[in-house]
Image 1 (tube, rainbow, N blue to C red):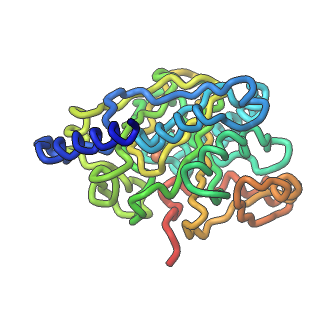
Image 2: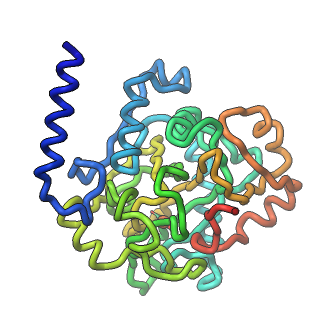
Length: 337
Ligand SMILES: O=C(O)CCC(=O)C(=O)O
Ligand SMILES: [Fe+2]
């Protein structure tokens, strides 16, 4: 019976192949046209185990394979987020005071900002979340490599300045594999809305013809690299347009590094911080390392979910250095020979 159903399905898909007339340009492997991401809400049991069951894990895999993005809601305690947010909002103002010398991305309303890499600001629920790790492991293979830990702060517009959006871009502004190799684990520290600059995302743009250097403008290493060509944006908009989803506080957003997206203006008076941690596939030869304070050594060495190459520095040194970093596109997320 099962065999008959399968052979029927096979012959149907064969006949569809023979008669297909739809052009593939600007189509992706996903057939969904929804502009909103799949959101998973773990059960109480899954939360206490720190582990998704089969159905929710399947949903996460579908979101990442087909859309290039998935949201997992209600996984991080709000007091953990508040503690880190208080510190990072102060730090954002310190960076903003540097004017054009701050590490901004595309325009001065969006700052590249590392979290303080010391024990009192390092909650495992945020930086080593077991459900986030389970999902990236499911996509990339056992013990993904965590080599980038930073954030993006959308700043309220300064007096007299015109709020600006980022151009639509892919963070993968270098030659890369055409199969999944890197996922960004984004943690919003507050609730994200279109008003405070929820990231614009273009679901389903991470694969096939839509992904790779041929769709981008801007040389690697320059501030405005990775921009998607205008004509392709217009074509894609007709197939599956962008959205700025509301993301509830406590959520984690996992995004394929190849997905088209853009930082948007923050029209409120509250700084909007989003952490961005990159998990690379275990086979991907990205030579970067985290720089962490020695007071985190025990915590990092006693976990086994991820490979975490670290340059260890003293606590004083860590605190002196973490706000003196480059803008987003100055990092090389490429693969060594
Ligand atoms: O802040 C955001 O929402 C996104 C920022 C971004 O994509 C970038 O700076 O590369
Ligand atoms: Fe980006």
